[in-house]
Length: 269
Image (cartoon, rainbow, N blue to C red):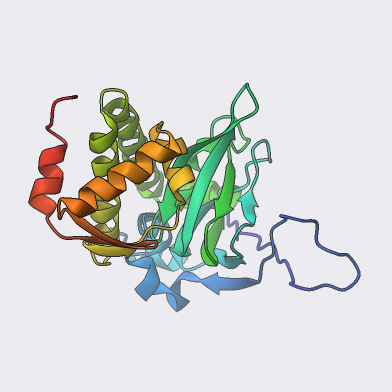
């Protein structure tokens, strides 16, 4: 059975219907994998949408039928919201996203973030609903891969489903590791962990591991790390005074990685 993926198209600035505040403002462009391989090589979805994972020639020809959409999301807009029906996975081509959940007391809790090369939407596979709000912290672009089409193609290509499970497993293990570490760390250790995790993820996707823009505000960092705003600011200042990092607004430069890694082993004062 041959099942081509259906492409959803959204057109920017349709005059008939004004856009609701905070809604997705997107320019969607249908793309086949052959048009986009250079960027895909640094994406965690490359094992699913780039035919380079030990596929036979006939399997590669089948994989070439996969069509996704490149969607631009403006700063401050939602890619999807908590409770929305799960329809697709999103590979971040460029930009920075935060994932936010609503707590029982009405407060927003930052539960994660995504940079270029990361995958969004995995948490919606089981419940078939997205579990959080995902907001662009800068003008960004994602590759949208409809999940139903991906699964249909996996039935025709042996090994594709296995690659998908491996990708999901990596995401789950990484997120669980972060949550387990945060539960036992003091403020300095938590901030050091965040900076080193960002550094590692930027390096894995071909970017500088020592110089990058931190798009989250101090308040959002505090929400993610479970720290008060004042504590986050003091800790940043302490790291800079000690020569571990240099901070210029949102630009971060790691000056002494070895000592920053040693912070992870400090005992709680």
